Image (cartoon, rainbow, N blue to C red):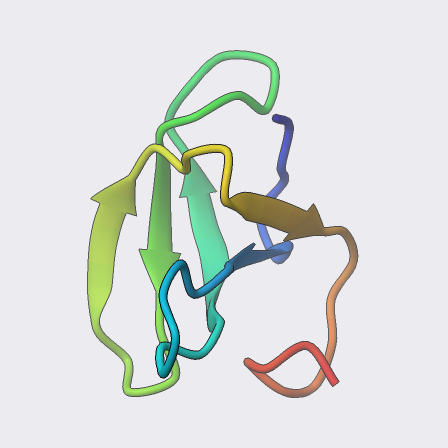
Length: 68
């Protein structure tokens, strides 16, 4: 997985009733775009994460945290 600042990470819900969760990459902490990433959610909370296989990168910037 490779991401850049401004990309979106979409973590797919793994169980019934849990929706996908989208966060913005604000800093790449790994080398060559690899995890871990500092991310920010729609509420402005930041954390560091190393996404698992249930995550995908949406490259490019958008105007909305949901990637729309």
